Length: 234
Image 1 (spheres, rainbow, N blue to C red):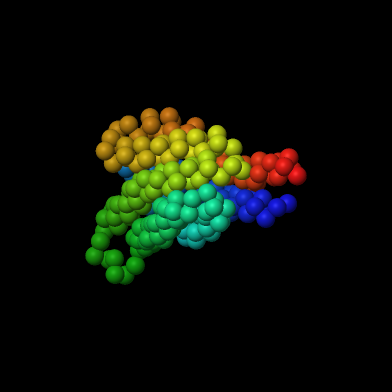
Image 2 (tube, rainbow, N blue to C red; image 1 turned 60 degrees about the vertical axis):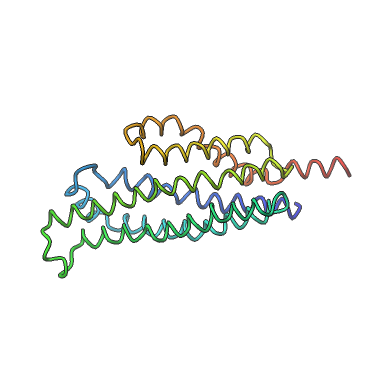
């Protein structure tokens, strides 16, 4: 196994860790614990499953940390194909989203404090605390909607680098661009046309499998095409 192939597989493995933890707070916890427009029910669910909710908070912190290593691994792998693009990829795909994950955890922490209650919150009624907790959960969701723009933007330089590198199939590059457009469209709709968000999610889902395909290729095949070219030239 060549050093390049090892780098590709390492990037795929780190990407897999990100993909395994990401759905916990993004999908599983909201669908399991949150009741839309029902603050009392949502608060009761969080109180009854506090450990799960706390795991969601830790999951965001884990993602914010591992994301740096994922993008750094991709930077090392693809830098020869375009150093400037690789830096842009790191900024939009690593530094900024990582900071957002850490900051956004504060919204969940605030919601949990309100649900648990504390002496300094006695001036608020229980209904008021529950409504405020729902507010912070909604803020968490809105921050994620904003972050989707970054999730899309970083895939553009990544796609260009994949196209140029010569050791990854170019079809992945095309799929990554479509994946980028899907994220940006969802972020735009979330703020400008929220009434179309659910319909757009169904349309965008197949496009968002581009990252999954890219991750699996790195993990399973690595820099396979590059290796085949080396053997042929040898």
